[in-house]
Amino acid sequence: MSGKVYLVGAGPGAPDLLTLRAARLLGEADVVLHDALVHPGTLALAARAEKIPVGKRCGRHSSAQRFINKRLVDAARRHRVVVRLKGGDPMLFGRAQEEIAALEAAGIEYEVVPGVTAALAAAADLGVSLTQRGSARSVAFVTPRVAEGEAASEWARTAASADTAVIYMGAGDAARVRTALIEAGVEGGMPVALVESASLENSRSIRGTLAELEALATARGEGPVVIVIGRVVAAASETLPMEAIGSAIAA
Image 1 (cartoon, one colour):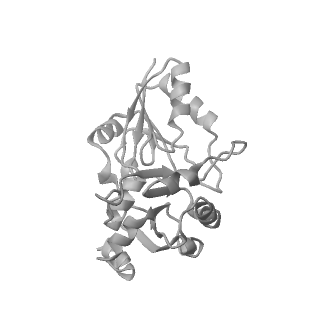
Image 2 (tube, helix red, strand yellow):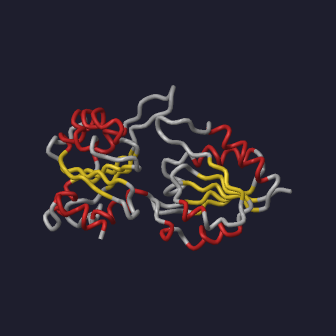
Image 3 (cartoon, helix red, strand yellow):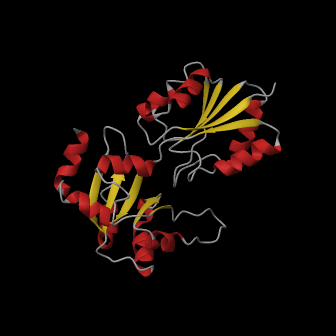
């Protein structure tokens, strides 16, 4: 048997933000290999499937990428419908290209099903448009994270050159992120917002400035966090004071 692998975006968290195609494929799946942060309600849609956790979380034991690649190929040789369920969108900071390369090398058919990425869910929770006519015409999605043995990237320069930047996987290293951005030319007074568990009922945000980023990050919980930086954050806070954000999102 040679089945088909679907690289499916699970979105930022909330199960009802799945695409219709993603929900249909979960219902048809024979096996689902899923990331660590996929919502239980999303996994419940794969009622008939074997569910295999293969997620990665910073500072915790996780599956090696080569192991995930092999599991996908092996699963496709035993099952008709294999879903690789990735948080957010598969093609953004999800190492999808490595999985695609492994599938192509093995002659396995695949399809990518997009999902809502965390940056867009965070913007929705904040009530902040990442682009604004006349003031914010460019957006950068970046991460300071690099794998062991890889050369450092130019993420800070990229973020500094954009009107709005969203930083993935950076809250745990907030001091280095702050320093790198300031050295790249971003003002210490630039508005920032940290959004935790975007799209979920327990979503919360903290706002301040780039200079305060390390202190802001210490207030985060256990959920995934993205950092939004740019003048668009200040524009939103004019209509919704910082102390009101948490209650407004919860409502």
